[in-house]
Length: 334
Picture 1 (cartoon, rainbow, N blue to C red):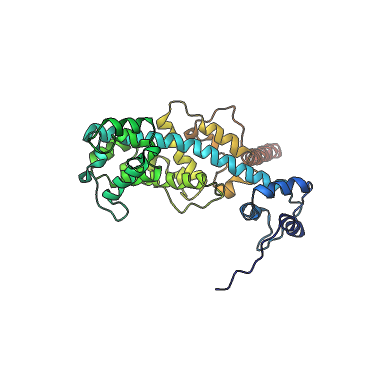
Picture 2 (cartoon, helix red, strand yellow):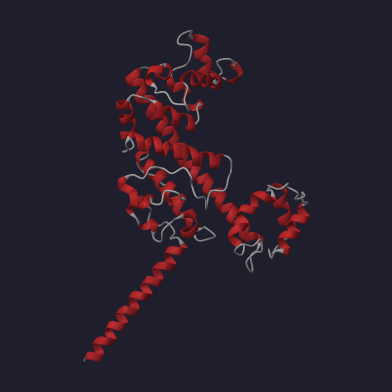
């Protein structure tokens, strides 16, 4: 290991360095304004696709706008993902609360007998977390419903489960569901999404992972996911490999089709992928013609991703060439 000795650079020095490496900056003041509010290191992750192999130098004719457009696309992708995750998160925790409350009472989460032991889950610590998040010790943290409960009721000490739904993160709900030891209730929850309960546990863990990526504004578009959602038989081909954004989008779309009768998320996904500045097949795992699969229920009016148009036209050219060759062969035989 060696000491870190790189100096901090001014914004002008950062831009000068990039231009020396071949980046075209036609509007210097505009680029400087972006660098003032988006730091060099953050944008650096978006330089890589435009750089020569094993080099910091840019490919010929790469402009600052190329990098910026990719950055904006990734931001739009995070926003679209969060739109899906919000509805899925609310839907899953509502299902857990409804089933567990009906089967085990309003305060089921306070019963340690309903949870199996795991080093990642200590029931007493979990109840302390609920106290802290719900304002048990600090009235200023309470919302109106929680304040009403704490000021009116003395027992049980904590609110019913439907009051704590919003104060616990998706990651916490993922752990709660995984540690519930009532298989019957877990099957009932998972069946609402046409899943087995181990599959739902796996997917909740994966969804909390991508949610945290989006919430912290990290780079999403070309990420190789280390948290791999379990592949399920009905859509196993679509989810393989399960390390790409495409696999995660399959998972989110599958969940949304169980939550809403007329999902439009896949149409908006198609619109966004069609605007991807770089090849969505190579970087994100979207196969050519992915939008044509009935699984997505994409409207016929949705724009066709450019790569699909390109590939489809090439295939059509090959077919036309084969037909022409056959016609010529028939004429020659005559």
